[in-house]
Image (cartoon, rainbow, N blue to C red; front, side, top):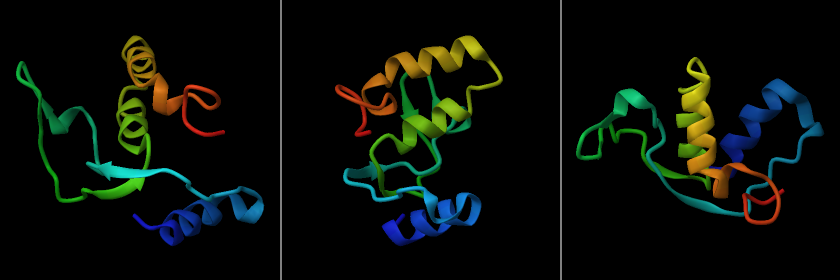
Length: 93
């Protein structure tokens, strides 16, 4: 993912009123969901979309894949609070 791609996708939906500048990037799976995780030994599958993405992108994908099970979505938010919660201690606001 590039800054240009991210900006274009957000602008398509919300127009140019949203600040889209990302200041922190990291290596990311790019398509993280429950179908791409195995257990009991944690293994990540399906790496064809991996690359650079905004910090928290994978956690946000996993959270969105959990929304149909509210308790699970809450657990994902708790576990990844450091990159999903805006403000001090979380992702930049």
